[in-house]
Length: 108
Image (cartoon, rainbow, N blue to C red; front, side, top):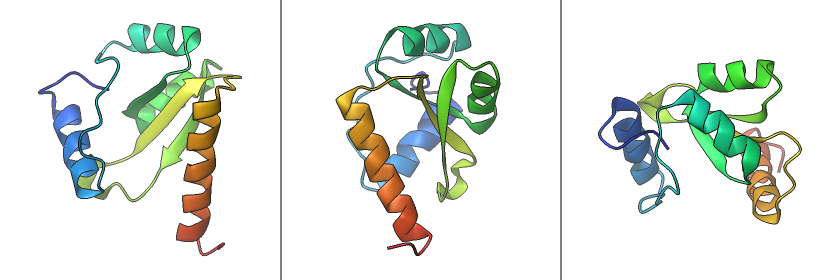
């Protein structure tokens, strides 16, 4: 997650609070793109970053991106993870997000 007390972190925490996600504790806090790239490359972590940063990382073939919509006033957000990552928790998370996206789009 972005570092504590930054505008992006405050907005993210407010959005999570509004959506019932209060109490999420990040495993890592960083504003460094290099740290984010390194951690995602070597782990099964998910990263939260701006939509623009997510597109940049995808364009470099470093990660996969899941764009999120309906984030209120927060603006475009993406979730990124290591390309080829097949961690069980990650797969469940992506499955839930896809299911919810279908509901939102009227597919279920």
